[in-house]
Length: 256
Image (tube, rainbow, N blue to C red; front, top):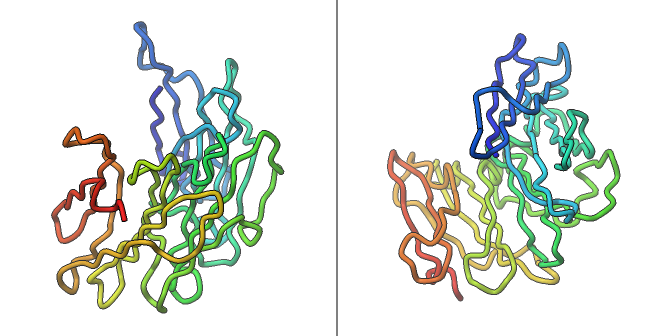
């Protein structure tokens, strides 16, 4: 299926359109998700998907980073045969100005329990130090979750780094656990730095691999994305942007 966002719809309230795939797919949306009326929070600024409750249906994750004076909010809509437009789970940022869910929303099973987990960054947290939250998926989740109650919290190194401005996930070392890739694009005068955290039964908060940009003002790490196995070696590969270029790192580079 295809999800398309329109962040400026209705005076920046925002709207997301879902089109079901199929041989007879057409241009009429099958499901429409709307942002809160009058909030001007740019609902669907970031979109992702994954099976958070492990029911066999992909769920839709929608970020709105301007919600409540840039606190930020993430809505989760469970998929199903008759998916509706009411959110099933809502994650709220910790503080005004943190900017939760700005180009940094992902889903992946970091502890390999069969449930995709929700990963979301707040790049402006604590004077632009930045923070990333990991919420474990479950068959039964609370309808409202404060970011302060995340299962794993990862913090940036320095004030101004904007750690968590880009977040992605996937198994890049072929151990069965999805790994977490986080960018701090303002690190060292915008040289940029990317951190890789390997998933596991008890994922820790220390990065396993660190990649640095080449020069100041390169903003290395915006964005970071898993791009599949581009060279056919059996490992997922990673694309990292910066300085108007894209750097491709093959999966075995992270197998340490």
